[in-house]
Amino acid sequence: MLKKDIEKAVDETSAKLNQMAVPPVRRWILEYVLWKERTDPALQRVVEECRTYRPMVKLLEIQNPDGTWSISAARKAEEDAGRGPPYGWTHTTMVRNLYMLFEYWATRDMGHIEDSLELLMSWQDDEGFIKGPEMDGRPRPYNCGLTLGVLLKFGMKGDMRVERLIQWLLKMQRHDGGWNVPYSQDMRYSSEFKYMRREEFMRLVAEGKVPEYDPANYGDVPSCIWTTLGVLRGISIYGSLNGEKRIKKAAEFVLDRFFMRNYHPSFYQSGTNWTMLKFPTYYGSGLTALDTLVHMGFGPNDERMDRPIRWLLNARSKDGLWHRSERPHPIDDQWISLVCLEILGHYQDMY
Image (cartoon, rainbow, N blue to C red; front, side, top):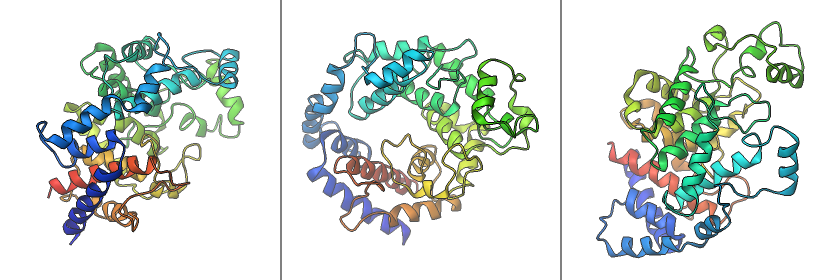
C-alpha cells in the first residue's frame, strides 16, 4: 500500500510541476526523478532554458571579482567592527549563494564561482576546519558540513584541502556517532562553567582561557541532532565515505531520533522542527534528514524509515504539492516539492 501511495504521489506531482515549475526545478525532475535520457526533447529544451534563468544570471552578475557578494551596510558595519571576513555575513552569503547557484545548474566555470571556492578554502585553519562565520572564532561543525557540501557539489572532491576538512570533521565525531558545537554544547555543561552566562563563557573561549577541547572528554553529554545532520549532509555527498561504519553510525544517530526533541537548547530544541517544511534544505528539518538518509541508501528495508516517509506523504497538500510551513511561497514551494519528489522517487527505486 505504501509503495502504491508513493508511486501515485511521484507521478501526480511530477506531472504538475512539469507543467508550471521554473526551469531548474523541471530539469531536476526530468534528470533525477524521471531519469530522462539526454536525447529527450523536453529535457533538451529545459537545459537551454536553465542557461538564461534570470535568478541565476542575476546572482552571477552581482558577484564581485573576488568571489564575494555585497552585503547590507548594517551587516558590513557589524562585520568590520568585529573580526572581519571570514567571520560575519560575507561568509554566510557566499555559501548560501553558491548553494543556490548549484541548484540553478550553474557550473564552476561561470562568473566568479571558482574565485568563491578558492576564497572559502583560503579561510581554512591549520587544523582543517573552515573559519567563520561566527564572531567568537570557534568552528561550527554544521557550517563546515554545509561548506563541504558546496565544495563537493562544484567538483572539489580529491582536493587535499577538502580531504583535510573531512578529516577534521571525523576527528570531531563523538562517542554516540554525532557531533556537537565544540565548547558551547559540551564543555559549557561542565561544573566549572554551567552557571556562567553564555556570553561570558564564549568570551573566555575566544580568549583561549578554557581547557583544550577534546570531544572524548564529554561522553556524558549527548550529541546535537541538527549539528550532526549538518555534518552528515556534507559528508554524505562525498560518496565513498558513505559505507564507513562511522558515517553509518552518524546516520543512525539521526534516524533513531527522528521526531525527537533536541537535547541542546542552543539549536532547534523543539520537536516541531522535524515537521517544518523549509527551503533551502540546508536548514535542520525532517525534510533535510530524509533527503540525506535516502541519498545514503536508507530505504524500505529499514523499518525506522517507515514513519518518516508516511509523514512526508501526509504533508502533501490537496493540490499535489508540498508547501513551506511558514508563509507558503510560490517558488519556494516548487523547490520543496522537488526535494520531496527526489526523496520519494529514490525511496521507491529501493523497493
